[in-house]
Length: 145
Image 1 (tube, rainbow, N blue to C red):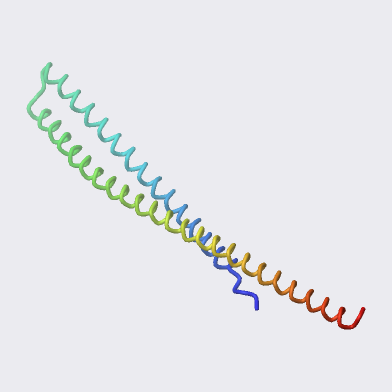
Image 2 (image 1 turned 90 degrees about the vertical axis):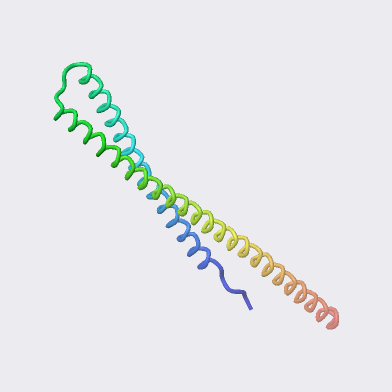
């Protein structure tokens, strides 16, 4: 009796691997977006600090100075928040990467198992063929043909 066909299982494992690839790509895309946001916020903070330094060399009112300090404080808090999000996205990307590796290994194992099963089945069929040919040769010999 022919063994179970592993093609369906192998196709399913391949679909799981493809899904993992797409999820990893999405995780990388989200991480990149957050990284760009962090870079932009850092540039804005640096520009704001440079602007306040220039204005301090000139004349600046206390109210404007307080407003600048508040904007700087807001940007620093925002940068901290974005760093936290970036860390979360990075961890998510790492999990997706590990998931992809696992799915890929599972598919490769199933492909290897399928190959082993096919070789074993071919070997079994070859033995059966040899046995049948021997039996035919024996019958012909006994019949004197």
